[in-house]
Structures are given as C-alpha cells and as structure tokens.
Amino acid sequence: MTPPETLTLVYAFAVCRGGGLTAPAEPLAELPGFGTGAPVRTLAAGPLTAVVQDVPAAGYDEEALRRRLSDGAELERCARAHHAVITAASALAPTVPLPLATVYLDDGRVQEALGERETSFLTALDRIAGRVEWGVKVYAPTGPPPAPEAAPAEGPGPGGSGRAYLDRVRTRQRGREQRHTLALRAAERVDAVVRGLAVAARRLRPHGVEVTGKHRIHVLNAAYLLDLGRERELRAALASLRRDETDVQIELSGPWAPYSFADGGIANAGIANGGATP
Amino acid sequence: MSAPIPSGPSRVDIDRDSVGRDLVALVLTVVELLRQLMERQAIRRIDAGGLTEDQIERIGTTLMLLDQRMTELCDQHGLTPEDLNLDLGPLGTLLPRD
Image 1: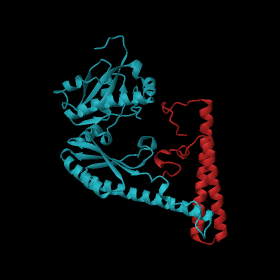
Image 2: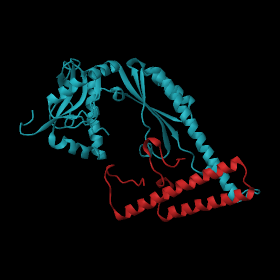
Image 3: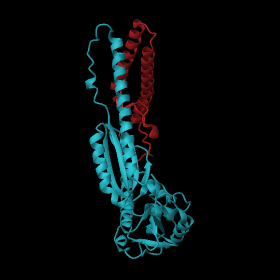
Image 4: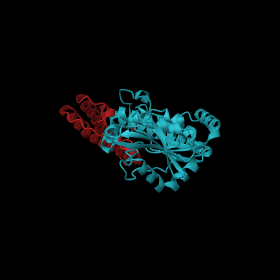
C-alpha cells in the first residue's frame, strides 16, 4: 500500500456498526479521501467499524494539521474531503461522524479508542439509525438604511435641534429593539414547529457578521434529527412558516449525516492528534 | 477592526499602518460605545421625566455634536461605522447592528 519507509498515521472519518459496511465497502475505496493515494478503508474494532485512511505523518501530525486548519482554503479542502467520506459512509449504513482531524498513530490505536467508547458509540448509532440531520437557520434582515427616519433637516418648531436629535435616536432605538424582538419570537416559533417533527434538536451558536454578511442577523441556528420519511412534512411545515413569518428569512439545509447528534465523539482522546475541531 | 485581512484567524499581521489604524479603530469603538450608552441614559432620564425643556435641549445638542464629531473622526481615519464594532462571539456584537 504505502512504502514501508514512509511514516504514516491513520485518519479516522467515521464509525459504523461492524458488518454494516463490510459487504458493500467498495464505494468507499473509490473515494479519494485526502488524496494521499492510500485507499479509504474500513477497520474492524469489536462490534464497531471505523472508516479510515492512511495519511503521511509529514502532512498530518499535530503541527501540520494545526497549520492546515488555520488556513481558510486548506480548511475548506479538508472539511470537504472529510464530509465526502462521511456522506458516502452514511449512504451505506448508520454512521457516527468523527470530528475533523481525528488522527491516530496506527490501526491499533484506533481500535483501542473505539473500544474505550464502545457503549457511547453504540448508543449514538442506535439514536441515529434511520434518521438524518436537517439544519434550520433563521435570519432577520438588518434595519432599513437610515433613509426612512423622516428626519427633517431643521428641527420642528417647539423642540429645537437638540430635542429633535434625541427623538430621532429614540425612534431608531425603539425600531431596532422591536425588530429584534419580533425576529427572536419568529425564530422561537420556527424552532417549536420543527422540533415537533424531530426526535432530537440542538441549538447551535448563531454565526457572526463575517458569515452572514452585513445585511442580516442570524437569530436561529438549529439542527434537528428527523426520521428518514419526514422530509416532505418538514418541507411543508417550512413552506407554511415562510408564508407566516414574513419578518425573517428561513433557510433549510440537509439532509446531513448526523454531525450534531453523534456525541460518541472521541475528540481529545490523547492519541497522536485528539481533534483540532474548528 | 474587521478590515478584511484574508489570512488565517491565528495570524497577526504586524504592519505598522494597519496596527495604527486598528488601534484608532479600537479606541473609537470604545468611545462610540460610551457615546451610545450616554444617549440611552439620556433618553431614559427624559422618559422618566424631571428634566426641563432647556436641560433636554442642552443634552440633545451635546450628544448631537458628539455624534457629528465621531463621524468626522471616522472619516479622517477612513473608518466606517461598521469598523467600529467588535464581534463578541456568542454574545453578539459590542454595538447593535441596525
């Protein structure tokens, strides 16, 4: 596979139930993974199977990974490679994704780590079997540009300009607070509806300006675990929410491998690289 | 502060000009925060009643001049109102975004 003189590490993508992947593992072997030349393969560990790939130590030890993941373009490439393998695996069997950059010294260490967390992996696998993750994001558009403030250049008769200024400030503040409250309430209603369809839900941290752009504020970032057959219901519910909640923008993404519901994670397990999760 | 420096998050670009500009932006951010707090406080006091028309007018004029001065300072240093803000992660931004 790899020349024996090259020092390699083992990058672990995901964990499935043993046997889940063994028969039709060919689609995995065809994936480039990180493009290291080594095939993406499965590795049995008791009742579990890990999806792994050999990677050269030079590019994937702790130091190299840290450098890699702090470079936006490289981070994206890694995340996409990671995600592609996880997606392929979840198409074959229930799959617990591992955090990005989970690297072990060798196969033995992978098996050891999986063994230590066997119960929690099995629980997580039970939880996600036959289910997928959907992401729902709610955005509030930021206020209208300062134009419609109706601020006449000269102050109105009684007040004078100081008072008029304060009135403008007050109007702007009230408007902002009101919009914000409305958006948060709308987000709660969206969450409540989707939660009703889901078997589990998680609220994630909303994104800041650098992701959302200046023209909108992220008010809800949530992940929901839904049974496989409920996509149509979910889409219908969101369509009706979009009709009702005109103050906010609602975005749906998915179906995803259950990234947010796989707490069998073995980040920081103290092996070569725990998990430099971004 | 949020000038688009397309490098990794952990990299610090020690460029004399950009450091100076970032420092100005940081100072002005703090000043702007205080200015907005004063505005809020003033409005609260007015709404609570107890200030004379004359007092309100004086406070309003002072705050308005401060606002104008801030705009001038920003222009001088080539900063926009969006530059005067900090992303506090899970807490949102330091100053409200409209």
